[in-house]
Every structure is written in C-alpha cells, then in structure tokens.
Image 1: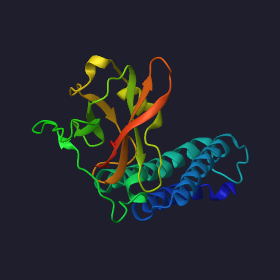
Image 2: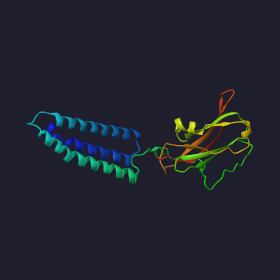
Image 3: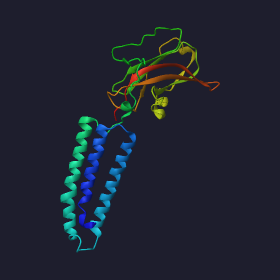
Length: 241
C-alpha cells in the first residue's frame, strides 16, 4: 500500500472537486453532509500517508527519507494549492459554499407579503392607530434589519421580535434575534412610534429571498406572562457571512 502513496493526494483533490460540484448543483442537506465527511476522511488519510512515508523503515518499499519529503513537496503541495484555488474560485464566483436556506425554502405560492422599507428614504406610516403595529426596514446589508413599533396599548414590560419561516414554520436565529430586539416599554410609550431597533437574520444569503413571519411579543412586568401583540409577513434574506 505504501508503494502507492501518491494515490492519497489525488483522492483528496478528487474529494474536494466532488464537494464543490455538490455545492454548485445540489441542494440536498444529506448529500452535503456526506460530501463533507468524505473530505474529512480524505484529509485524515493524507495525514496517515505522510506519517507512514516519513517514519516507515522499509527501504525496499519506499524511497529514502529525504526523497520521501521531496516527493511529498513535489506532489502534495501543488495538488493542494490547485485544489484550494479551485475551491476559492467556486466560492468567489458562484457562491458555492454558503447557507442554502433560501433555496430550500422557496416562497409558497399565494402567500402575500410585505417588502421592508428603505430606512434611508422611507418613513413608517401607521395606517390604523387604533391597534398595535410593527414596521420593518432594510439595514445596511442584506439580512440586517431595523424595526419600529407603534403601541396602541398602554403596556409595562418588555417587547421583542420572533421570526419564523412561513413555509415550514422554522424559527429564525433563535439565539440572537430575541436578545437584539428586546426593548423595555412603559405606559407613556403608548400611541407613539418607538425608536428603531436592529437585528440580523443569519439563515440564507444575499439575494435568495424567502418569506418570514415577524411576530411582536410582550411580557408583562408584573404577571410575567407573555402574549403575541401582532404579526406581519415580510420577504427577507439572510446575512452572508
């Protein structure tokens, strides 16, 4: 087996090529995970190959130690550089290795939704001041949003945002949005448009839109009971990390 040590770097490059093609042309999460583990196994095999080549004492089966290292540099290094460059090109020009949430959650037919306002040129308009309302703005980058709340009720406690993908009802950025949007309110905040608060949706990438249900929740400071005040459906995208 040691005699065919050159097979390992070739297998590694082939595995990188396979996973790149999978990211380009397939949206199956299962296949993505399988390809990822194949690449991991290829890297582990590469490490085993290097250890065997460097420390094996069978001079009849493999070249001398200094020649082994030379062969490793001559064969492995160029192949790894080529594979890395290929993956970089895929990522840069095709968006290959990214969160594919938007592709897996297309906008359902017949669903009505709103478009977030442009915060630089548009201001929120409350059409019905006899009820609570929430307005969403686009932030500085895709996936970053601001929101403003209009409270008709006199409330004392905390409000926050929860976001859910409409088609499969998956909660978005559970660990961050609630903390980012938490805001204390008092009765004096009723019937006014509260200042903007910022939050980020991490599921998905720029330009791949899906529909999310934006819910405004309230927790009473005395009873500590929570209830949903209002919900709206918006077209959103994820922040590309």
